[in-house]
Amino acid sequence: MSEKESIIEVKDLTAGYDGQAVLKDLTFEVRRGEVFVILGGSGCGKSTLLKHMIGLYPPISGEVKIEGRDLIAAEGEERQEILTRIGVSYQSGALFGSMTISQNVRLPLEEYTDLPEAALELIAWMKLRLVGLEESAGSLPSELSGGMQKRAAIARAMALDPVVVFLDEPSAGLDPVTSAELDALILRLNEDMGTTFVIVTHELPSIYAIADRVIMLDKKKQGIIAEGAPEELRDHSEEPFVRQFFHREAEAKS
Image (tube, rainbow, N blue to C red; front, side, top):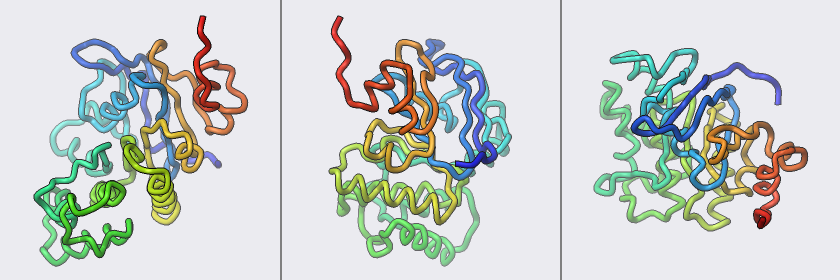
């Protein structure tokens, strides 16, 4: 992959809760137009990192810059403006059960724009069409399959035309066929729309299918132990845990 400009810069980030660090001194970048995956073993801090990258929690120290603007330091209207440049789809989908799929997709538009009703309806329909759900616009989330709910959540995450979309465990709870279909959708949106994706996952088939680059977090070291293309790390990493992860090997007993 050719070098592209950084769209996200994380520098010297120490993240955790109530002053207790989970991750220490993380520095990395996400390049415009790539599919970037955060992976690692259970409890290593993958979701913690994502939550800090999208501004849900303030870091203990360090910076998160989106398109060169510091999300951590920004306040008021500037912070809201930065946040409208990103979209997020959570592991559960987090759709509102009492609203139709179309109404769910419209929510960010109603919150951050003054568009008329006709425009809201049209944009929601267009976003649902992107993920193949335009015929389900009037359905409630409970009437959709798990895979369809995930796609609807991605449509909502893309409502404001963000430059980056964050996905937290998008394949969780899906069967292998549905998971592969979701991978294909992510690749199509990345290629056709130029959308940058930051994805938390530990699903190896998905990682190999979609990731341009990955970073691997380690619970013991509280940081990044590997960075690069997944195939490169699988075949050439000198870190034992990295090799075990990509080859699905059990940890040797002492």
